[in-house]
Image (cartoon, rainbow, N blue to C red; front, top):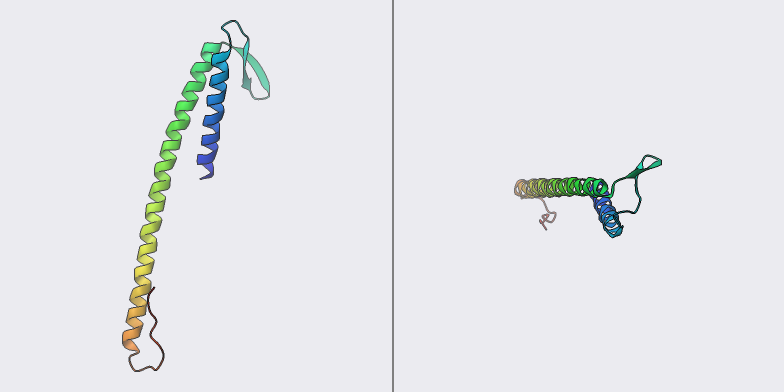
Length: 108
């Protein structure tokens, strides 16, 4: 979940950067971040690099979404199995305690 949020934020930042780059004139100086240093770069190269990075982020988001759905599905299956086991134990114990005076547990 945390990775997914980070990727969504990264995608938004890339969108903003692309928007600003497209506003810049062809003769305007543009720079890219390389660690703690800014390096002068060509506008077209930066646009291409950011679009590739955005595509990669989108793909990773899609993969994480599918993984999340699979995990939720598996969790639901395990939850159902546990509930079945609990119901089985409750119904099994109520049949063997037919002579007891206590109330029978009921499944909810």
